Length: 124
Image (cartoon, rainbow, N blue to C red; front, side):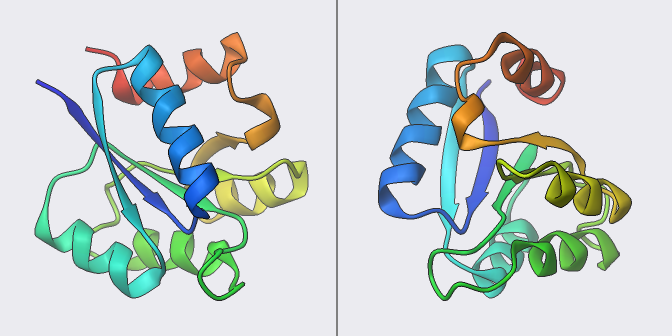
């Protein structure tokens, strides 16, 4: 059975690229969400194996950490695995402190280490 990924805050180009990358390496279905309200509605309406959150949401430029913190602080969604998508190490440190898993940057797509990191959540 396919794993499900919720990809929050990506522009259309990055949404397509991340989805393609994930499907090349894993049996996944990737659902997009533009902002916090979309993400929370999706999480409450279905089961997801991983949530990817862009550091800065394309929809309105807001801080993706708000999404990470909201997911991890809500009793209905706190157990969902979350990763921040960012090329900045300090952003990953903040996300991990908020309860997220160590994420990756778009510049790292295709790296063996990123595939291994994602396999923990997406491998069969």
